Image 1: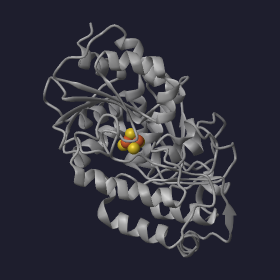
Image 2: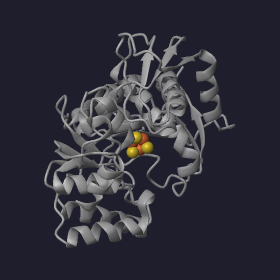
Image 3: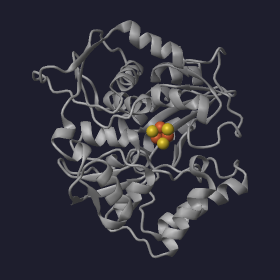
Length: 369
Ligand code: F3S
Protein backbone atom coordinates (compact mmCIF):
# COMPACT_ATOMS: atom_id res chain seq x y z
CA UNK A 1 0.00 0.00 0.00
CA UNK A 2 2.87 2.38 0.76
CA UNK A 3 4.43 1.78 -2.69
CA UNK A 4 1.17 2.50 -4.50
CA UNK A 5 0.29 5.56 -2.44
CA UNK A 6 3.79 7.03 -2.81
CA UNK A 7 3.66 6.60 -6.61
CA UNK A 8 0.22 8.20 -6.67
CA UNK A 9 1.48 11.18 -4.67
CA UNK A 10 4.44 11.62 -7.01
CA UNK A 11 2.16 11.70 -10.06
CA UNK A 12 -0.65 13.80 -8.56
CA UNK A 13 -3.28 11.07 -8.04
CA UNK A 14 -6.06 11.83 -5.58
CA UNK A 15 -7.49 8.34 -5.21
CA UNK A 16 -6.94 4.62 -5.67
CA UNK A 17 -8.99 2.70 -8.22
CA UNK A 18 -9.82 -1.02 -8.36
CA UNK A 19 -8.08 -3.01 -11.08
CA UNK A 20 -9.19 -5.97 -13.15
CA UNK A 21 -5.80 -7.71 -13.35
CA UNK A 22 -2.07 -7.36 -12.80
CA UNK A 23 0.78 -8.60 -14.96
CA UNK A 24 4.05 -9.07 -13.14
CA UNK A 25 7.40 -8.61 -14.93
CA UNK A 26 10.80 -9.14 -13.30
CA UNK A 27 10.41 -12.93 -13.45
CA UNK A 28 13.48 -13.97 -15.44
CA UNK A 29 16.30 -14.82 -13.04
CA UNK A 30 18.74 -13.74 -15.73
CA UNK A 31 17.42 -10.17 -15.65
CA UNK A 32 16.56 -9.77 -11.94
CA UNK A 33 19.25 -11.75 -10.11
CA UNK A 34 19.44 -12.61 -6.42
CA UNK A 35 18.15 -9.33 -4.98
CA UNK A 36 14.73 -10.07 -6.46
CA UNK A 37 14.67 -13.49 -4.82
CA UNK A 38 15.16 -11.93 -1.39
CA UNK A 39 12.40 -9.35 -2.04
CA UNK A 40 9.91 -11.92 -3.39
CA UNK A 41 10.64 -14.46 -0.65
CA UNK A 42 10.16 -11.83 2.05
CA UNK A 43 6.80 -10.87 0.56
CA UNK A 44 5.65 -14.46 0.09
CA UNK A 45 6.81 -15.61 3.55
CA UNK A 46 5.26 -12.52 5.13
CA UNK A 47 1.85 -13.64 3.87
CA UNK A 48 1.65 -11.52 0.69
CA UNK A 49 -1.07 -12.93 -1.59
CA UNK A 50 -2.51 -11.48 -4.79
CA UNK A 51 -6.09 -10.25 -4.55
CA UNK A 52 -6.91 -10.24 -8.28
CA UNK A 53 -5.99 -12.37 -11.33
CA UNK A 54 -2.26 -11.82 -11.79
CA UNK A 55 -0.18 -13.25 -14.62
CA UNK A 56 3.60 -13.45 -14.95
CA UNK A 57 6.13 -12.44 -17.60
CA UNK A 58 8.60 -14.94 -19.11
CA UNK A 59 11.21 -16.68 -16.99
CA UNK A 60 14.63 -17.70 -18.25
CA UNK A 61 13.99 -21.43 -18.69
CA UNK A 62 11.93 -23.58 -21.03
CA UNK A 63 11.57 -26.91 -19.23
CA UNK A 64 11.33 -28.92 -22.48
CA UNK A 65 14.08 -27.40 -24.61
CA UNK A 66 16.50 -25.61 -22.29
CA UNK A 67 16.37 -27.29 -18.87
CA UNK A 68 18.98 -29.88 -19.81
CA UNK A 69 21.47 -27.44 -21.29
CA UNK A 70 21.49 -24.69 -18.64
CA UNK A 71 23.71 -24.95 -15.54
CA UNK A 72 21.90 -26.18 -12.36
CA UNK A 73 22.82 -23.00 -10.43
CA UNK A 74 20.90 -20.82 -12.91
CA UNK A 75 17.90 -23.13 -12.96
CA UNK A 76 17.84 -23.13 -9.17
CA UNK A 77 17.75 -19.31 -9.06
CA UNK A 78 14.86 -19.33 -11.51
CA UNK A 79 13.01 -21.94 -9.48
CA UNK A 80 13.25 -19.78 -6.36
CA UNK A 81 11.70 -16.78 -8.16
CA UNK A 82 8.86 -18.94 -9.50
CA UNK A 83 8.23 -20.62 -6.12
CA UNK A 84 7.84 -17.25 -4.39
CA UNK A 85 5.42 -16.00 -7.06
CA UNK A 86 3.50 -19.27 -6.90
CA UNK A 87 3.18 -18.95 -3.13
CA UNK A 88 1.64 -15.50 -3.63
CA UNK A 89 -0.93 -16.89 -6.06
CA UNK A 90 0.50 -15.48 -9.30
CA UNK A 91 -0.63 -17.48 -12.37
CA UNK A 92 2.50 -19.00 -14.02
CA UNK A 93 1.54 -17.83 -17.50
CA UNK A 94 5.21 -16.93 -18.14
CA UNK A 95 4.48 -14.90 -21.25
CA UNK A 96 4.77 -11.28 -22.35
CA UNK A 97 1.48 -11.68 -24.28
CA UNK A 98 -0.95 -12.50 -21.45
CA UNK A 99 -3.75 -10.85 -23.46
CA UNK A 100 -4.14 -13.81 -25.85
CA UNK A 101 -5.43 -16.03 -23.04
CA UNK A 102 -6.81 -13.45 -20.62
CA UNK A 103 -8.04 -10.51 -22.72
CA UNK A 104 -8.86 -7.59 -20.43
CA UNK A 105 -12.30 -6.03 -21.02
CA UNK A 106 -12.37 -2.77 -22.95
CA UNK A 107 -12.21 0.18 -20.57
CA UNK A 108 -10.92 -1.91 -17.65
CA UNK A 109 -8.14 -0.64 -15.39
CA UNK A 110 -5.03 -2.79 -14.97
CA UNK A 111 -1.59 -2.75 -13.40
CA UNK A 112 0.71 -4.34 -15.97
CA UNK A 113 4.47 -4.21 -16.03
CA UNK A 114 5.66 -5.55 -19.37
CA UNK A 115 6.13 -2.52 -21.60
CA UNK A 116 5.06 -4.24 -24.85
CA UNK A 117 1.94 -5.64 -23.18
CA UNK A 118 1.17 -2.23 -21.67
CA UNK A 119 1.19 -0.55 -25.08
CA UNK A 120 -0.89 -3.39 -26.56
CA UNK A 121 -3.47 -3.24 -23.76
CA UNK A 122 -3.87 0.53 -23.96
CA UNK A 123 -3.68 1.07 -27.72
CA UNK A 124 -5.22 -2.07 -29.22
CA UNK A 125 -7.51 -3.41 -26.48
CA UNK A 126 -8.49 -0.01 -25.14
CA UNK A 127 -7.82 -1.00 -21.53
CA UNK A 128 -6.03 1.36 -19.13
CA UNK A 129 -2.67 0.63 -17.56
CA UNK A 130 0.31 2.72 -16.69
CA UNK A 131 3.70 1.27 -17.40
CA UNK A 132 4.29 -0.26 -13.98
CA UNK A 133 7.60 -1.44 -12.63
CA UNK A 134 7.71 -5.05 -11.41
CA UNK A 135 7.42 -4.08 -7.69
CA UNK A 136 4.51 -1.67 -8.23
CA UNK A 137 2.58 -4.19 -10.38
CA UNK A 138 3.07 -6.79 -7.63
CA UNK A 139 2.02 -4.29 -4.96
CA UNK A 140 -1.12 -3.51 -6.98
CA UNK A 141 -1.80 -7.22 -7.37
CA UNK A 142 -1.68 -7.64 -3.60
CA UNK A 143 -4.03 -4.75 -2.78
CA UNK A 144 -6.16 -5.05 -5.95
CA UNK A 145 -5.84 -1.33 -6.69
CA UNK A 146 -3.67 1.23 -8.38
CA UNK A 147 -3.31 5.00 -8.16
CA UNK A 148 -5.47 7.02 -10.53
CA UNK A 149 -3.02 8.92 -12.74
CA UNK A 150 -1.44 8.80 -16.21
CA UNK A 151 -3.37 6.79 -18.81
CA UNK A 152 -6.04 5.86 -16.25
CA UNK A 153 -7.37 9.40 -16.69
CA UNK A 154 -8.89 10.90 -19.90
CA UNK A 155 -6.24 13.70 -19.91
CA UNK A 156 -3.44 11.14 -19.76
CA UNK A 157 -4.67 9.49 -22.97
CA UNK A 158 -4.73 12.62 -25.11
CA UNK A 159 -2.17 12.81 -27.95
CA UNK A 160 0.86 14.97 -27.28
CA UNK A 161 2.44 14.81 -30.75
CA UNK A 162 1.35 13.96 -34.30
CA UNK A 163 3.40 11.75 -36.61
CA UNK A 164 2.60 11.80 -40.33
CA UNK A 165 3.84 8.57 -41.89
CA UNK A 166 4.88 9.48 -45.41
CA UNK A 167 5.98 6.08 -46.58
CA UNK A 168 4.32 2.71 -47.22
CA UNK A 169 5.21 0.14 -44.58
CA UNK A 170 6.16 -3.15 -46.22
CA UNK A 171 6.33 -5.61 -43.34
CA UNK A 172 6.58 -6.03 -39.56
CA UNK A 173 10.18 -4.79 -39.50
CA UNK A 174 9.02 -1.49 -40.99
CA UNK A 175 6.31 -1.29 -38.33
CA UNK A 176 8.91 -2.00 -35.67
CA UNK A 177 11.21 0.67 -37.08
CA UNK A 178 8.35 3.17 -37.14
CA UNK A 179 7.60 2.42 -33.48
CA UNK A 180 11.28 2.79 -32.62
CA UNK A 181 11.47 6.18 -34.35
CA UNK A 182 8.28 7.44 -32.72
CA UNK A 183 9.25 6.17 -29.26
CA UNK A 184 12.53 8.05 -29.37
CA UNK A 185 10.90 11.33 -30.34
CA UNK A 186 7.78 11.20 -28.16
CA UNK A 187 9.57 9.86 -25.05
CA UNK A 188 6.79 9.45 -22.46
CA UNK A 189 4.09 11.29 -24.42
CA UNK A 190 1.20 9.89 -26.46
CA UNK A 191 1.81 9.79 -30.24
CA UNK A 192 -1.01 10.11 -32.75
CA UNK A 193 -0.05 8.31 -35.96
CA UNK A 194 -1.54 9.39 -39.24
CA UNK A 195 -1.14 8.02 -42.74
CA UNK A 196 -0.85 4.34 -41.82
CA UNK A 197 -2.38 1.98 -44.37
CA UNK A 198 -4.39 -0.97 -43.09
CA UNK A 199 -2.26 -2.74 -40.50
CA UNK A 200 -2.60 -6.16 -38.92
CA UNK A 201 -2.79 -6.54 -35.14
CA UNK A 202 0.56 -8.35 -35.22
CA UNK A 203 2.20 -5.45 -37.07
CA UNK A 204 0.79 -3.03 -34.49
CA UNK A 205 2.10 -5.33 -31.74
CA UNK A 206 5.60 -5.01 -33.23
CA UNK A 207 5.21 -1.25 -33.52
CA UNK A 208 4.10 -0.86 -29.90
CA UNK A 209 6.84 -3.13 -28.55
CA UNK A 210 9.61 -1.19 -30.24
CA UNK A 211 8.03 2.16 -29.33
CA UNK A 212 8.22 1.12 -25.68
CA UNK A 213 11.86 0.04 -26.12
CA UNK A 214 13.24 3.30 -27.48
CA UNK A 215 10.93 5.50 -25.38
CA UNK A 216 8.76 5.39 -22.27
CA UNK A 217 5.38 5.74 -23.92
CA UNK A 218 2.53 3.44 -22.88
CA UNK A 219 -0.07 4.31 -25.51
CA UNK A 220 -0.38 5.26 -29.17
CA UNK A 221 -3.47 6.61 -30.91
CA UNK A 222 -4.51 5.88 -34.49
CA UNK A 223 -7.78 7.82 -34.62
CA UNK A 224 -8.11 9.63 -37.87
CA UNK A 225 -10.00 12.61 -36.52
CA UNK A 226 -8.50 16.10 -36.39
CA UNK A 227 -5.91 16.28 -33.61
CA UNK A 228 -6.01 19.20 -31.17
CA UNK A 229 -4.33 22.41 -32.34
CA UNK A 230 -0.80 23.27 -31.31
CA UNK A 231 0.63 19.75 -31.02
CA UNK A 232 4.20 19.08 -32.00
CA UNK A 233 4.33 17.47 -35.48
CA UNK A 234 6.85 15.22 -37.16
CA UNK A 235 6.99 13.40 -40.45
CA UNK A 236 8.36 9.90 -40.85
CA UNK A 237 10.15 9.17 -44.12
CA UNK A 238 11.38 5.93 -45.66
CA UNK A 239 14.93 7.06 -44.87
CA UNK A 240 14.19 7.41 -41.14
CA UNK A 241 13.00 3.79 -41.04
CA UNK A 242 15.83 2.39 -43.16
CA UNK A 243 18.38 4.19 -40.98
CA UNK A 244 16.98 2.50 -37.88
CA UNK A 245 17.04 -0.96 -39.44
CA UNK A 246 20.61 -0.37 -40.60
CA UNK A 247 21.72 0.89 -37.19
CA UNK A 248 20.18 -2.07 -35.36
CA UNK A 249 21.60 -4.62 -37.83
CA UNK A 250 25.00 -4.99 -36.23
CA UNK A 251 26.05 -8.36 -37.58
CA UNK A 252 28.63 -8.52 -40.32
CA UNK A 253 28.37 -12.29 -40.72
CA UNK A 254 26.41 -13.97 -43.49
CA UNK A 255 24.92 -16.70 -41.31
CA UNK A 256 23.21 -16.38 -37.91
CA UNK A 257 23.66 -18.97 -35.11
CA UNK A 258 20.12 -18.45 -33.90
CA UNK A 259 16.99 -17.30 -35.69
CA UNK A 260 14.57 -15.89 -33.12
CA UNK A 261 10.89 -15.32 -33.94
CA UNK A 262 8.49 -14.29 -31.19
CA UNK A 263 9.39 -11.01 -29.55
CA UNK A 264 6.81 -10.29 -28.21
CA UNK A 265 5.68 -13.92 -27.93
CA UNK A 266 4.02 -15.16 -31.14
CA UNK A 267 0.31 -15.01 -31.76
CA UNK A 268 -1.38 -18.05 -33.25
CA UNK A 269 -1.21 -16.34 -36.67
CA UNK A 270 2.53 -15.83 -36.37
CA UNK A 271 3.12 -19.50 -35.44
CA UNK A 272 0.97 -20.50 -38.41
CA UNK A 273 3.04 -18.27 -40.71
CA UNK A 274 6.27 -19.99 -39.63
CA UNK A 275 4.70 -23.43 -40.05
CA UNK A 276 3.46 -22.57 -43.56
CA UNK A 277 7.00 -21.65 -44.60
CA UNK A 278 8.55 -24.76 -43.05
CA UNK A 279 6.11 -27.42 -44.19
CA UNK A 280 8.13 -30.29 -45.62
CA UNK A 281 11.45 -28.43 -45.14
CA UNK A 282 14.47 -29.24 -43.05
CA UNK A 283 16.53 -26.69 -41.07
CA UNK A 284 20.26 -26.34 -41.63
CA UNK A 285 22.46 -28.10 -39.09
CA UNK A 286 24.41 -24.97 -38.13
CA UNK A 287 21.43 -22.71 -37.32
CA UNK A 288 18.83 -23.00 -34.56
CA UNK A 289 15.32 -21.66 -34.99
CA UNK A 290 13.41 -20.58 -31.89
CA UNK A 291 9.75 -19.72 -32.19
CA UNK A 292 8.86 -18.28 -28.80
CA UNK A 293 5.26 -18.20 -27.65
CA UNK A 294 3.00 -18.78 -24.67
CA UNK A 295 1.91 -22.23 -23.53
CA UNK A 296 -1.63 -21.16 -24.39
CA UNK A 297 -0.81 -20.41 -28.05
CA UNK A 298 1.39 -23.51 -28.28
CA UNK A 299 -1.57 -25.64 -27.19
CA UNK A 300 -3.78 -23.98 -29.81
CA UNK A 301 -1.16 -24.52 -32.53
CA UNK A 302 -0.54 -28.26 -32.12
CA UNK A 303 -0.34 -29.07 -35.84
CA UNK A 304 1.93 -26.08 -36.58
CA UNK A 305 4.20 -27.04 -33.68
CA UNK A 306 4.48 -30.52 -35.16
CA UNK A 307 5.49 -29.07 -38.55
CA UNK A 308 8.05 -26.66 -37.06
CA UNK A 309 9.58 -29.33 -34.85
CA UNK A 310 9.62 -31.89 -37.68
CA UNK A 311 11.72 -29.38 -39.64
CA UNK A 312 14.14 -29.14 -36.72
CA UNK A 313 12.92 -25.88 -35.11
CA UNK A 314 12.01 -25.40 -31.47
CA UNK A 315 8.74 -23.91 -30.25
CA UNK A 316 9.86 -22.44 -26.95
CA UNK A 317 7.58 -21.42 -24.08
CA UNK A 318 8.06 -19.62 -20.75
CA UNK A 319 11.09 -17.64 -21.97
CA UNK A 320 12.63 -15.94 -25.02
CA UNK A 321 16.04 -15.44 -26.58
CA UNK A 322 16.50 -12.13 -24.79
CA UNK A 323 15.72 -13.18 -21.22
CA UNK A 324 17.57 -16.48 -21.26
CA UNK A 325 21.34 -17.07 -21.40
CA UNK A 326 21.93 -17.28 -25.17
CA UNK A 327 25.63 -16.43 -24.85
CA UNK A 328 26.16 -19.36 -22.50
CA UNK A 329 24.29 -21.54 -25.01
CA UNK A 330 26.81 -20.54 -27.69
CA UNK A 331 24.82 -18.02 -29.74
CA UNK A 332 26.72 -14.93 -30.89
CA UNK A 333 24.73 -13.96 -34.00
CA UNK A 334 20.97 -13.58 -33.67
CA UNK A 335 18.65 -13.01 -36.61
CA UNK A 336 15.19 -11.72 -35.78
CA UNK A 337 12.17 -9.93 -37.21
CA UNK A 338 11.69 -7.97 -33.97
CA UNK A 339 13.04 -4.45 -33.59
CA UNK A 340 12.60 -4.75 -29.82
CA UNK A 341 14.80 -7.88 -29.77
CA UNK A 342 17.34 -6.15 -32.02
CA UNK A 343 17.45 -3.26 -29.56
CA UNK A 344 18.13 -5.47 -26.54
CA UNK A 345 20.25 -8.34 -27.93
CA UNK A 346 23.57 -6.44 -28.09
CA UNK A 347 23.44 -5.42 -24.41
CA UNK A 348 21.37 -8.21 -22.81
CA UNK A 349 22.87 -11.08 -24.82
CA UNK A 350 26.18 -9.72 -26.05
CA UNK A 351 25.08 -10.75 -29.55
CA UNK A 352 25.27 -9.22 -33.02
CA UNK A 353 21.95 -8.84 -34.77
CA UNK A 354 20.53 -9.24 -38.24
CA UNK A 355 17.08 -7.71 -38.60
CA UNK A 356 14.80 -9.02 -41.37
CA UNK A 357 11.15 -9.90 -41.94
CA UNK A 358 9.84 -13.29 -40.84
CA UNK A 359 10.03 -14.86 -44.28
CA UNK A 360 13.72 -14.01 -44.64
CA UNK A 361 14.47 -15.18 -41.11
CA UNK A 362 12.86 -18.54 -41.73
CA UNK A 363 14.59 -18.79 -45.13
CA UNK A 364 17.95 -18.20 -43.49
CA UNK A 365 17.37 -21.06 -41.07
CA UNK A 366 16.24 -23.50 -43.73
CA UNK A 367 17.89 -22.36 -46.96
CA UNK A 368 14.52 -21.99 -48.70
CA UNK A 369 14.40 -20.50 -52.17
FE1 F3S B 1 8.74 -10.86 -24.64
FE2 F3S B 1 11.24 -11.51 -24.48
FE3 F3S B 1 10.47 -9.76 -26.26
S1 F3S B 1 9.90 -11.20 -22.79
S2 F3S B 1 8.70 -8.75 -25.38
S3 F3S B 1 9.89 -11.93 -26.19
S4 F3S B 1 12.26 -9.56 -24.95
